[in-house]
Image (cartoon, rainbow, N blue to C red; front, side, top):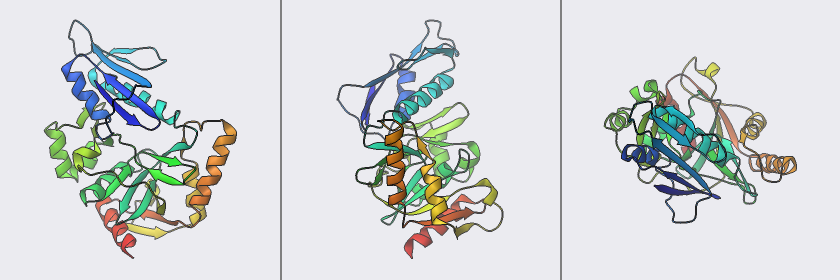
Length: 284
């Protein structure tokens, strides 16, 4: 059983099967453990037959999923737990579909649609020694205007791993905090860097990722700060507590925090080169 805190929730993942227990440990391996009472409970169970497709996943207020393969059952729990977090951020916060990295004390938000390369760029930055907020979900607290880390796994495909042999070796060795499930590797940020979490803060820059910008030389091109701020507000996930009015208030607060933030479009198809360009820009 693993019980972890992702404010304001306490998530409990449980299984009586040692294989499933290790798999559950990979999901929020980097999130802080807690002994507080759980608010959300999830479980993986194996049928008595022991067949490869004999796994069942249980999540709050939903029908059980399965029987299915372990990877598919785990992917179901990963999605449902994420969905529950997004819809339960609390009265003061929302989650954003974005990545974040701290480059020498300068926080960069990395924004793009699914598949745009946020996870790959973030992993490249981690390998260069930078701390991060996460690769796909970051938390924004409206009261203090700060963005903070969420300790979920980084999701990488085989193409991404080819350019990162250190991470690929950990996945191949099935190191703690790594898992191949549903065709993707889930890698805990703590499996890449023991001290992985960036401090909560306000961003210096927003980096926009778009597959249409992959042609040409890798680098960063300055773009409209107003456009970038609007794009970030469009990435609010889940429902803000208090309904539509509260969501509108959070959006206004987001725009206020992003008013003086620099904006760049990432170009080229080499994430390592883009990571280097981002480092150089942060050092100016």
